[in-house]
Image (cartoon, rainbow, N blue to C red; front, side):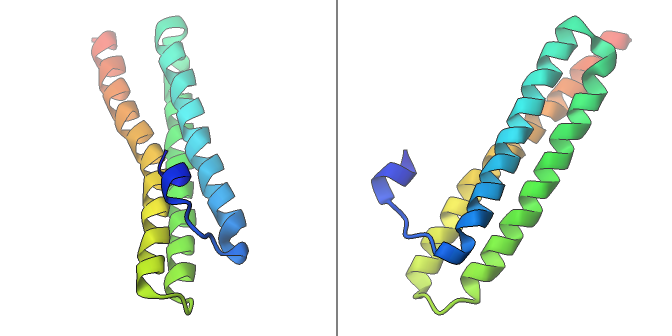
Length: 114
């Protein structure tokens, strides 16, 4: 929704990084969905899916940091830099939320074994 309302002007040289960040965040959510399904179908494979979520979350953090460094080393006005940084944060937050849910799923899985 924010992309359609605010219409950020993303620099052409970092556009591919935004795509990578979006893919990493989306992959973390997909792995989360697989982990949730595994919780009800095959509890032994939950850990594998949670590991994937954690991997994609770390990847999104790395990509987000790369984007932020590129943005703030550019000659853009500070207001535009902050605007672009906010969008990076919003996309990155998707993967962070997926990891938070996985933490709760891990606890539920451990409790189920007890």
